[in-house]
Image 1: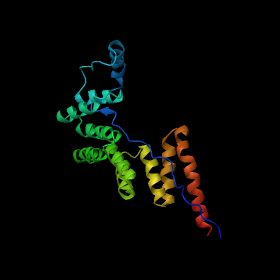
Image 2: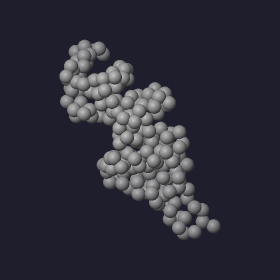
Image 3: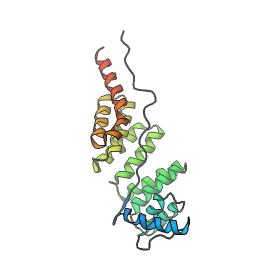
Image 4: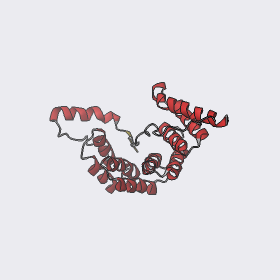
Length: 207
């Protein structure tokens, strides 16, 4: 009797949480060099450019891994500046600090304000994935794709969920789409997994 290959018991780690990197005014990339000059001149204590909105200030601190970022996001929320984005990024900080319940709350609050917020759907799906609730994880990954169909990390993590649910054809479809959207170097994450899944399908069809 031919032994059917099973999906690897320890699949590759899911891709990480996704931060909102642009405010309503656009990217803060243009201010990073300015902030770096302040940092070089003043050591760890530096000023934020005064022309930034509360959310942009929080995002810039976050990009610098400054411990004041969380407080700054709360200030953006209080100022009603890019509130859903601020809640989303704050949720990532809460997760990194090990406060999973607060992270859930932040992503949920973001979605209450903007039900079509793709990063919050994706990040909430990641939390459900980590909690072992694959059904809700898949649902939120799918909702993220409805809003942002070119969001590659969603396809990778959704492929993992489908594989763990033994829905191998859909897992392959998602992982192939991920490969289409990323560079060949990034696509290597999915190559071995795709090979295993395709061997699993082939073995099961030969029975």
